[in-house]
Image 1: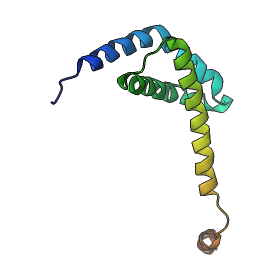
Image 2 (image 1 turned 90 degrees about the vertical axis):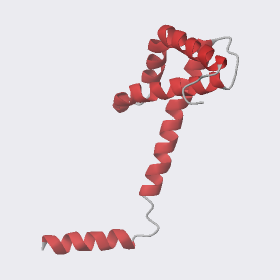
Image 3 (image 1 turned 180 degrees about the vertical axis):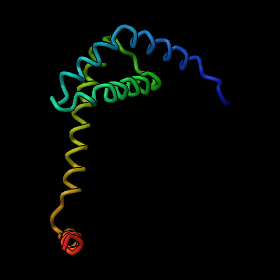
Amino acid sequence: MGGASRPEDAEARELLADWFAEYGPMVERVVARTVRFGDVDLVEDLAQDVWVKAWQYLLRGNAVERPAGLLAFFARCRVVDHYRLARVRRELLSDFQDDSAAVSRLASWVGAAA
């Protein structure tokens, strides 16, 4: 199998390339308008994730009548997902139920400074 691609893959690849040429700037604008002000450094990465999602969507054989709408939807969803996952990660990192590790770490810092 190796590098051989199915005809559908070639069609999807060509369609995605056409979309990227036509809608690439729009996807970045949607992501840029949706991210928080201090997170503009994430725009390029999140926009790339949108293109991966679009590629997967096309490979599943989904028909698309309005690519601009679909890509804008994917862009907004990707940004929302980013912040949702970031919130969960912050909550896990700041779980204060078990403070024994924090107390031990603080005690070692105080002891080292003394």
